[in-house]
Image 1: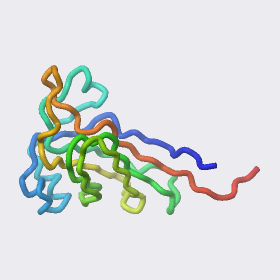
Image 2: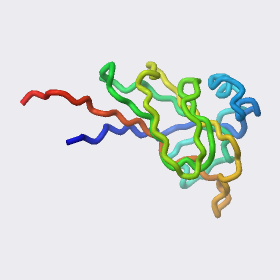
Image 3: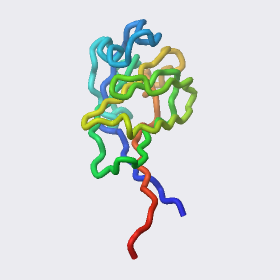
Image 4: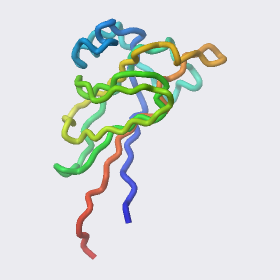
Length: 159
């Protein structure tokens, strides 16, 4: 019987930028350069967004995280985005990991071979339309959730 993966939610503090360069948005620069070319990063807390709202509609958002501890060399680790609202490029440690069409989709990427001790994940939004504004005038966060899923290795267990 398969077990549920261990889930690490990437909540807490994210950084957002109102714009990125056209080259970053079009994908004609490397992921690392796209992250650097963002115009001024602002820190936001996801747990306060409902009460405070976003200061602006983001052109990019990123979060730093450490490598999960006690991973086996071949243990599957996935980065999962749920409820992506618009098209974007997902970068992991400055390298393109995936492109997404948006539209409330879920994207799951296997990433254990790309993890380092200190990691960053960035979502560069390809267009701003579709994010919209809520009734109160606060821009919407571009996704519902971002998390790591760590699958348990199968094998013999002691009794």
